[in-house]
Length: 125
Figure (cartoon, rainbow, N blue to C red):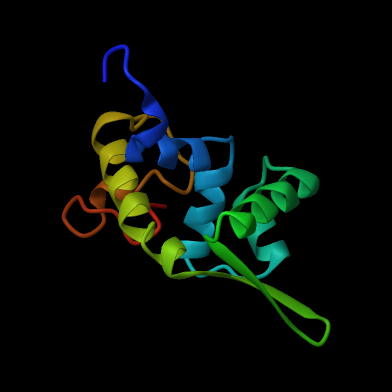
């Protein structure tokens, strides 16, 4: 791809869709089964509510997430395209546990490398 046009590169297009800060972590939370806005917020403590709303809206426009309402209850669910990202989240978790893991980390991802013989649980954290 040296000097070439990257518009048709599938990796470049995927990165363009998912590279904004917090986007993959929002997907991670949805993969982990969180469905409601406040559940997502608890899983992303550094992400402001307005930024979380923007990321969910972006993922909805991209066809990765659906917003469903049942009366006053709102929940977010992965579309089939979003479900396909489960393997990406798992692979990123495995890669991070192997190559980017901080030995001093005591956060929620600290035990990823030890779960299931080195494989991350679904959602990576």
